[in-house]
Each structure stands twice: as C-alpha cells, then as structure tokens.
Image (tube, rainbow, N blue to C red; front, side, top):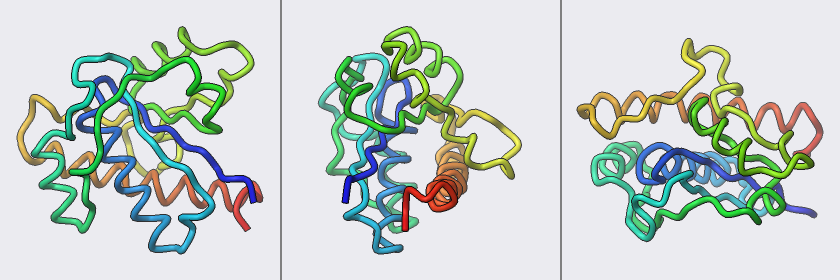
Length: 161
C-alpha cells in the first residue's frame, strides 16, 4: 500500500507545524493508521533549523498526551513538493510562500490545514509564539479539529480504506 505523505508547514517550524505533526501522528496511531502515512513538518523560513519545538508548545501538547520533544525544525526544500501528497499550511502567508516555491505541477497539493475544519471560525492557525499559554491551547484545539477532518476527507475520497 502506498503511504499518504503529509507535510505540515508554518513559518519557523517550532510551534504550529510541529504541533500539527505531533497531533496528527497521535490521531493516526489511535486509529491504527500509522502504516498508511508518512508525516513531517517544516518551516518556510530557516530561523530555527535544528531546534526542538518551542517549550510552551511541547508542554501544552504533552498535557494532551502528545510528545513533541523528538522533533527538529527544518526548512521546506524544493523536493518536498514532489515527495509529499499534501502540503498543509497553517496560514495564508505560508500558502503564498509555498505557492511561489512550488512547481506548477504540484501546486494542487498546497492547502490551508483548517480547510479540513469548517466548524472552526478562523481559516488560519494563529502563531502563538508571542502570546501566552492560551495561544498554544487554541492551536491544539484547531489542529485536533483539522486532523479529524483531514482523516475523514481522506476516507470519503477513498484514500483510506
């Protein structure tokens, strides 16, 4: 079975996208779908390459049973657009940056992650970096909703049996 390859993307790859990667991995583990996926995260900027996720993001995720400490930030690279089936951005700014980097034949892979969570009023996952603890909780809520919706969409499309 061909794995579904998913890349979560934010600006620096230390808050939102590693949170999405960790939460999505927990969702697929709980549904015994780990073998169906290859999951990663990256940033559109190289501010934090090699760094662990923000400690506040790690703490908030850990409190929900999701471990992020093993993840390391990296920058999106041109081969990602070929390798990944879904490139899910946390906000419009990153969609724009990704679209500028992406070859035309792969642009259809780029979407906002919250497109899969229509019940969430916002279309963008806000960057919690400069905010307080509540921002990280809000990101987790949004990412959990979008993870559920993404899995449901893949099931509807027949990508998951």
